[in-house]
Length: 311
Image: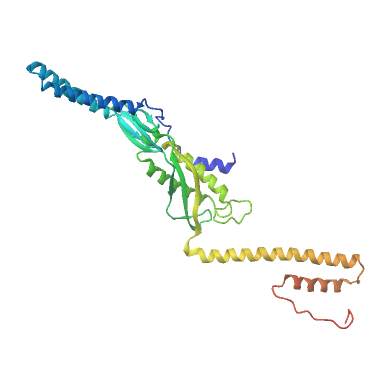
């Protein structure tokens, strides 16, 4: 690990170790539980109806009370039924204690005395607003990012943070701001990283920092990308002129390097093929003329010499 990576890792807040981890809750198929519950309701109703045909007061009271108890018991048992859709989970609690998570989709039955909280395990997108921060050089820039994430540990998402959706949103904004102030928009040093020139490396570092920040909430970061990156409006025109000037200088440098090579090759071929002997003064004049023709941004107007080489 490099010194810079160690520094970035050190800047990430150290989250506390999770106190609870997800495990599967004890549940049975809901179809059988539903059938037994309906049979209990029918049995209780039948007992109550039968009591109307009994003449004895004691037997009638016993049948009515028994039927009511059976109906209540069947109804309470059916309260333990849960419909779990694909991409969802149910976090089960019994008197405040975590009793597991139901991830199997379909109709499931658990202890009716428990409480069940629905947690979505689908893949989600979170796009930050356009943030205005200063880069490593102090230049104001605007940037936004989109994060693809999902809940991996439902127990941590429920018990480790108050609101895991808001937690992901806040930590994403914090990570984007931190990455923005660590690197410049454009690096003047060729070996340095920049937000615009090294998008892949920067997004990888953003993903690493996001993972460290939201891991405590049981969230998995699938992908993170910058969706907007630009200079702030107050310096955009000045920075555009600077970029254009840099591009012109780079182009001129490449043109000069190519022209020098062409002149060198031309002089070497003239000397090798013994086309004409040039003294240092005429050679310097030839080099000057060739450089003007090759490096000029306009077409040169040649002047024809109808006399000798030295007139």
